[in-house]
Image 1 (cartoon, rainbow, N blue to C red):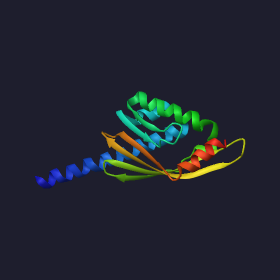
Image 2: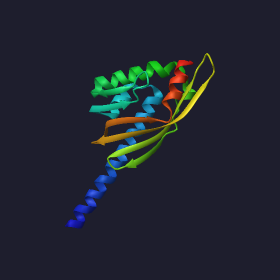
Image 3: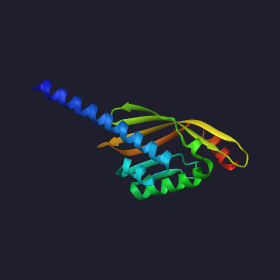
Image 4: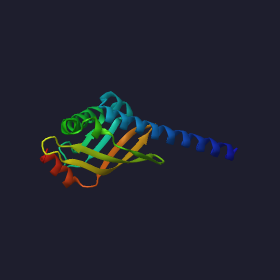
Length: 152
């Protein structure tokens, strides 16, 4: 009986890990496609998003209303700097149980100066019921990002 319960728990855990990874992949696809509804669909209703305070859209955002504010702030910052060729984030998804770790690239192209940005980012997503409950981004160099944004 104990072995049966253990195998069932293992199967459920593996299923949830797969669901967590797939949901996070959908989030990244929605971000690349600029699909706000797709982004929100990946989130738990009580989502908490933490982004670097030094960025124009940085701070802590809570719930769907907060998520929409974060999405709009990021879009206002990056849409003019990310033509379709710069939106691909080349993400790698890592299963960490109740967390998904994503390694990706932040890219941009400043039209006026022709300067390019291409930096690594690590994001940590805490999952709940297959949805993203917490999101935090760790940028390789926020000073470089700020300089790029000021030089656009």
